Image (cartoon, rainbow, N blue to C red):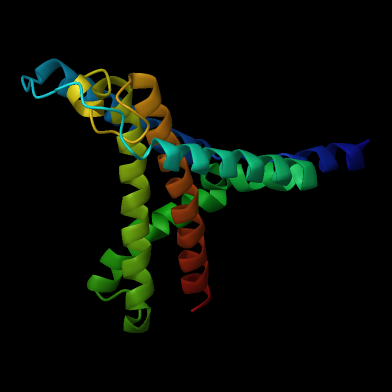
Amino acid sequence: MSARGSSRTSERPDVDRRAVSFFVGVFAVGVLIGLVELLTDRDQTSTGADVATANWVHVGIAVILVAALVAAYVRDRRRLAAVLARPFTAAGWVAMRRGLTDLPLLLIGRRPIGSALRALLGFVLTVLIVLITLRAGEQVFAALDPDFTRDAWGGPSYVGASLAHWMDGLLLFYVLFAGLKRVTSSSARA
């Protein structure tokens, strides 16, 4: 029985409350920023522009993304789940924390100078991950303003612009996090 129980826990990635709380908090701040933008917007520049030419780009990205996710799911769904959950695990939390703190620690002399480039890269990647999360939250309310979605990739509608921005954001989030994980794990060995 215990062997069976331990195999179950290894199938599902362990999610860390700190990481989830951090990302939910950043997303919530973005939602509030978007609401403030929507309520305080006095700009009336929307001209009913045609749908952005990037729609076909997003359709192509979406098709490739869906095909890749289906292939990954069919090949090894546990590994796919682990990859998707990685930013929200304890290891993900450590990577985010190191990305934010290694550069300041280097600047005050508590890290070897040889790791300066890794520390800078980790900091930039972490800040971009936070900004993408913030921007995704902002999209919730700010996209209700026609000026916000007028020239948006995905079209001038709320749904089109939001889906396109969230898809872009998620792709960037996971690509940047993979880079952050690589940078912070290599700096841990150095």
